[in-house]
Image: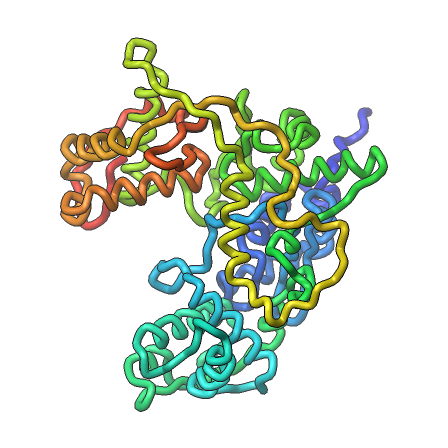
Length: 452
């Protein structure tokens, strides 16, 4: 009789429980913070059920640390790159700006000093006292813009269970701080789980110091670390191009064990092409999906079709090709943007030879070479043609503002690694070729967008 198959991950999970375990893995990877109410009341029991196995597998596979305390589960992730594609958002879906992020940070600081209950007015006063000492920030509850930004930060904490409404509502306070009020119970375990920096922030000279700086020395340790980098890249990014990563990581991305490991852990299939790999999301693993529903996502697919035909049609006009700027160009620009807001007055400098100065990180492999360049004018014409051809599938707001539709569709394609935005247009990346032969049909349009 042959020996049973030995799995590297989920080794102590039987086949009957494997789908539930994989659901728990996807849950933790998608929601690094889980509370009794966030993302729903069933999430925390699912994680607790497999706690020991999850801790072991997430550590071994990705170098992540899962902590469970009180009513929280917190995944401490090792980040290799800054990711601008997953911002905090308000309840209305508005991405946070610097003001909202600042208020959120100051709220956490104030709640760390608070008791078991607080009112919204008390919290606003504490945040205002700190914000008004910061040049260029401030908080004046009598100013509508400040008040809305503050309520967005508080709402983010409410959603995750850090603040639980005992009486009143933030909406009433937002409408009239003099008449409305909200009383909150403070969930201190959630507050402490939320703020888990990997470094003492007063010692951070650049945001790159918060990225993973693991230094492997022995051959086995280097291979293990490269394998973790490969797995992290696949679950953290919509698509991973081999040209964007170091050769050691690319070797793991090409290997069969990676697909088997991730299938065992997540239940998702890895799609491998010559240029790179992606995890096929068949279970709602990612917050944003592509292709997806909604006018912007539908326009993005149709734009991808147009770009693919323009770039790959051998009978068409010759397309200009430009050198890829490489993954580090956008990364360095984001580093510079974030570092420009660093409060240097409170910085405590330490000697840290292990962390390179900002912008001096290793570049990894070269880019994909020369990529097809599609001009903004072509994209504007393509969006106009899409609106004309599929007019009944798009609402009046998009027909009235096609430039906004173009901008948001291109931004979506950029987030998913299909294009790289450059001055005057975009560079078409290999993922676009996936959609060259996509055929769209128009369905009758009810109250929501249903193009495909």
